[in-house]
Amino acid sequence: MDHAPRVRALADADWPRVAALEAAAYAGSGLTEGQAALESRGRVSPGTCFVLDLGDRLGGYVLALPYPESAFPDLAAPERAAHRTANLHLHDLVVDERLRGRGLGARLAGHLTAVAADRGFERMSLVAVAGLEGFWRGLGYRAHRDIEVPSGYGPHALYMSTRVPVRGPSNRKKRADDGAPRP
Image (tube, rainbow, N blue to C red; front, side, top):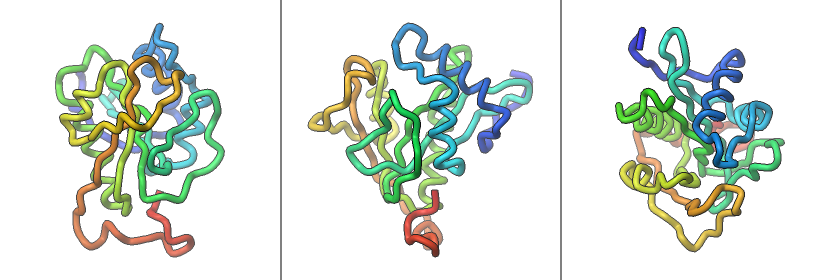
């Protein structure tokens, strides 16, 4: 790594690199959505999408968007609009395979959790894929085996969720225009 990794907001110019990281991470799994679908998810909640910036390249990304509890994006369809909900769905988190095992995935997830708390979200959810249930359990997520996940998410995909820790009085501020957490 040329520079110390830093987490920053995802910028429009990052999308080709995000799509390349996604394609590499899910090669052969059938889970690759492609750049247009990823962008559609990022557009509905740009304030909850981040990259791991290494200076000369991206080392990873996390995409999250408001989604009702027990629900998740349809992988075959682009997002059209943000949902009004107190649940933030972590749709995708990828770390470049050359950088795995260094705590960078947990760092991205921790950054997202802090942002979720600051924006007033009460819960976070995700669909654990590719056998990563243990990773998410280690970050405080609990499995909901009673919630059926479509086969498009791959074999053994599992819906999981956690409560967002309260960080202080400012994290429950609501948006004046609609009363929903700030996306």
